[in-house]
Length: 183
Image (cartoon, rainbow, N blue to C red):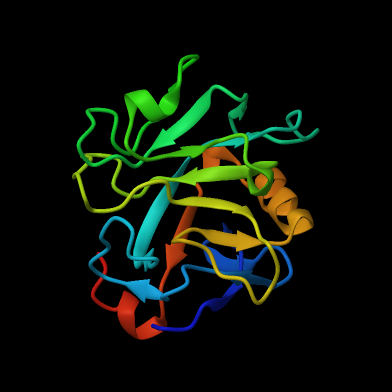
């Protein structure tokens, strides 16, 4: 549960059987490992099974990608201000974000050249339970995240091109033991 290095594996159901889809990939998670009780700012990645929201990035949508894609601008923010009605939401705002929110993520960040929203704490949104959980590009194999899942850019692109919204892709996050109690 405290490890920050993970293996990303992809599976798809073919003729009733789960089969590996892409090669195994190295990845990293939150600097404080996994948790079953995520809290805002704890540096941990949430254990569970989550669907994906929109894919996004500061670059043009990759060719062959089936997921919805939102190109980010300097006016796009993900709000992690627990006192705001915008908590754990993507907002586009042209004013000074520091005046509007106490805390936010700039969606035009270099690690977000390509990524996808992991639908953690999105329905319903519970303030303080954690926000801005994404699949995105890493800083490197020894550099964990603040709670997201990250891997090499080529892997993020492979994953985004492989995911098909018709198939309802999900991410399973955690250790084998921690996932035994997940529904």
